[in-house]
Amino acid sequence: EHAKSIVLTQDESLPKAEKIKICQGVDSRGKRVKVSGWVHRLRVQGKDMMFVVLRDGSGYLQCVLTGERCHTFDAITLTTESTITVYGVINALPEGKKAPDNHELVVDYWELVGKAPDGEEAFNSKVASDADPSYLLDNRHLVLRSETTSAVFKARAEVIKAFRAHYESRGYTEVTPPCMVQTQVEGGSTLFEFDYYGENAYLTQSSQLYLETCLPSLGDVFCIAESYRAEKSHTRRHLSEFTHLEAEMAFLTFDEMLDNIEDLVCDVIDRVMTHKPTRQLIEQLNPGFEPPARPFLRMTYADAIKYLQDNDIKKEDGSYYQYGEDIPQAPERLMTDKINRPILLCRFPADIKAFYMQRCGDDRSVTESVDVLMPNVGEVVGGSMRMDDMNELLEAYKKEGIDPSTYYWYTDQRKYGTSPHGGYGLGIERFLAWLLNRYTVRDCSLYPRFTGRCTP
Ligand code: 4AD
Image (tube, rainbow, N blue to C red):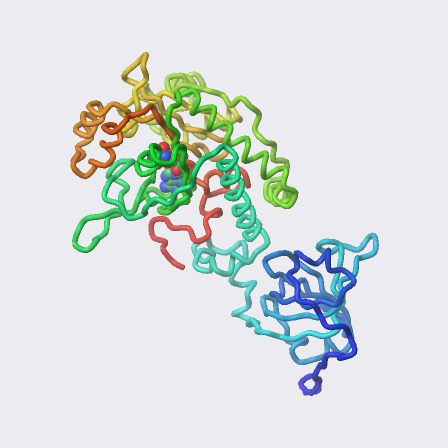
């Protein structure tokens, strides 16, 4: 009752507070500032002192409340995740005391904006790290606020920025292909189909075919778009919707494309590691991360099969993998983890790869294809050179059971000035799972979609 009667007032004789974001704190030390955010942590010390770590998405700021500022009803009933606005001066902390950015805001006045619940409904009970994964996914909107998860999405934003900067520096043009399409790219079994004004349409599996059509107009191109796959299997690296970074290049050889992929991965890692705030995020999430050494190991599919046999990596039934069979994710990971460096796995048999892939000049049974395998994750990039001969492509449609009439625009690419060309797709969530050492790609997707999960 007594607390309810205490009303804080702002001292009008103080300088007017300048509104800042927490990331501007270091530059604003010594001035009176106004900061709004969420109560990230709360610690009461005695009856005259309270420490609040405030979070606004741009950083964390320790605030110290003293005297009557901790005696109000709002102070006594303050909870984590409540929103508040604080006024005061940021001072550097003396040696030995620890807080984010080594400073703290001494609050002279504060206001409650929105109080978060206490007790059973309290935030902490919704995000407990030992909770059931599906409960945490139901509460993904709250989990996003945790230090680890927000670090993942800060790093993700920086990584995407670095990819864009890479392509800009290499002269590529960014395009935005459609997500609603009427052609398949990576096989019919994983298509999401929907009704498009009475016609059949799909959510795109890959923007590759569209990127190819941009080459004569824009030269080398890339896009960052969502791709969709109805993947029935529950694995830690498959999503139903993922962010797909794809690039396509004209007039190059397969080996040049492999060089480009290596350049992409290494240059992007270089960019994020030389940007101090991003390097700190990577060190926080993946302590001891070492950028991969160049050159990456180049290995053929045939040698991978031999490696599996020589290293006793077998199928579940105890038999060996044979040439011509798809290498599933488990053996692929065992091999990659054992080799423990990035692998450019090349020359897959045509029979187990997509219809559009160019055959190798010296062996028509294998393709100019590549998967980039990373330790702990496995495949993060898939790419190939594309068939550039029209008749060969028409044959390939037939073999795949594809109706060429819906692909007329893709075929035209070979008719109106064909060119050797190729490209690749990189799964952003897989790349991040590798770089940030996350157990599953789900942790790197804002709101992961997979079988049985489309909420929130
Ligand atoms: O190997 P994929 O299927 O290749 C293509 O889609 C080509 N058309 C790309 C191109 O050449 N432009 O997929 C490329 C990458 C994979 O290496 C993987 O990183 C990611 O996309 N990916 C997935 N990521 C998460 N969940 C899934 N279900 C994924 N499917 C593919």
